[in-house]
Image (cartoon, rainbow, N blue to C red; front, side):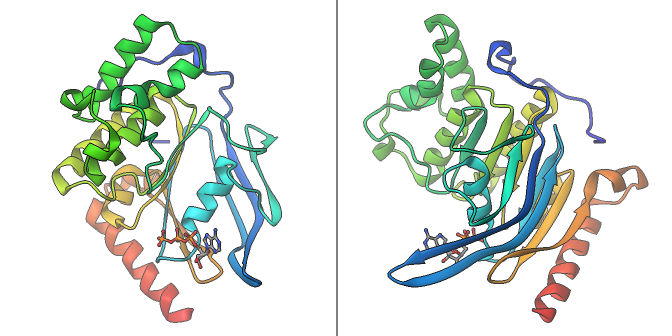
Length: 269
Ligand SMILES: Nc1ncnc2c1ncn2[C@@H]1O[C@H](COP(=O)(O)OP(=O)(O)OP(=O)(O)O)[C@@H](O)[C@H]1O
């Protein structure tokens, strides 16, 4: 995968993993929504494989079905056609091994920040001392240690987004599904959280499917960038960042490449 050496990720909760094979395989997937008699085809014939331990980022214009794709992989809803397997097993509903962070945060408003981050650990029966330590560590990573006792309504959008990320990471899921997880945070925090995410990924062999509008972010984080476009959305191109790193391509070279591909794809659509 060509990833650089790890710095210092949080220790792994060894008891929480039940498989080292965490490949995501999406085959010929289409998704239609029906609302008030109107049918929208959000995705058509999308195929994509994310290998165990790979970091794949999906980029594409608004409305091309990126969130829909993540919702299907997370098991929140089924595809209309095609199939999705994780670790070789069909996705049938949400699974704690697939940690998800969506744009709308989905925090529990009646729980404090600390309780939100601890939620998955309580569900999994992690002993109190280990739980408290893990939550403390996660709050330090996202820079919200001073807000442990605050409620979501007291937080800004960016802070809520960071709590959502900490909650997903706290249970050390084998797979991370992240939909614009830094979309509401300021640029400085965004760069810091990107570094934290990279450290965690490098140190814990997670499989990551990430969605962003930010091409620089995609280049900085990913092994591979998948470009989607159109309505219904389809996969239009793939750029392998990891394989080209030994050739000393600069980050800007990849940003330019993805932007050029975007322009070409858009002019064909
Ligand atoms: N629950 C739903 N019911 C009806 N249509 C939907 C639903 N969810 C998504 N869509 C439609 O499916 C298409 C893809 O939406 P989706 O949110 O997946 O795109 P996206 O690429 O993630 O967009 P953005 O970058 O703006 O988040 C859009 O036309 C959207 O209106």
